[in-house]
Picture 1 (cartoon, rainbow, N blue to C red):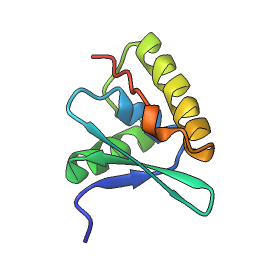
Picture 2 (cartoon, one colour):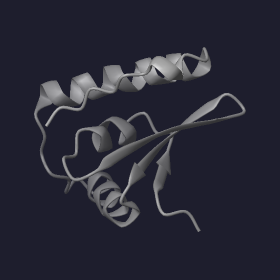
Picture 3 (cartoon, one colour):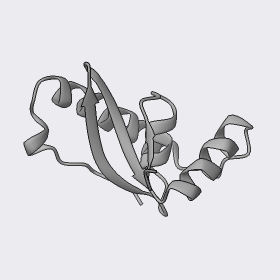
Length: 92
């Protein structure tokens, strides 16, 4: 059993990227699909459930927009084999 949370969702991933108590572990590409991996798994599941039920903690809009841009860049870089030079900017 994996001990991390994995998602490809374009709303969930940026949301998790801005959470202070969540660690972005990296990505996995499978058949052209990029999966984002986060830790700790149990906290990610809680946050995703809160997100889906509209009970998620609030975050700064600019941080979320920056996370969306990072998400898009990571997808692009992963699909083009550029992940070696990937730099993730996390807003805290």
